[in-house]
Image: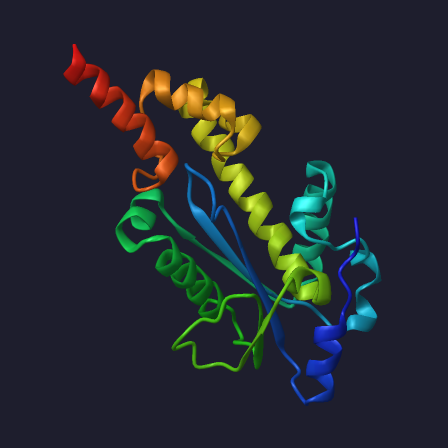
Length: 215
């Protein structure tokens, strides 16, 4: 695991930006559950010692993510999140849904940031200067923090779906396309939280339909 550095924030401060927001999302590639985007403005980097260990959320153990979640929320100057439901992902398409969530998360910050750091994607019509970074969670502690908040929030939402539909095993895979998840969809059909436009879910429906026609 490599901790995120603060190169992007330090550059932004040198350019005269004071409120810098990092933005990231979780759940983009999942077959079920919402897409969650988070925007976070961290305090001055000299006050970030309690947040050491920030890194891409995917590289951190769940217990570490939860611990960092509490510290980020306590220390952040501002943070906000936005969710796009599975039905909205189906309606809008994944890329548009992703950009919609990122935009809503940023514009919900109070006060608004002076600069937005994003992991790869550029958000059109945001009205705020933005810097799109490749592997942003490696070069920006703000983006890394946003990735952790988004992952923890989405995991908690998927646990809620698990309590309603335990047969799919959402507590283990959080809606991603694991072999056990695909097997559960094949046996039981999709749940209301599944994204019906996604290939993994559609393929299961096609297989079931073909079987019915053959009978």
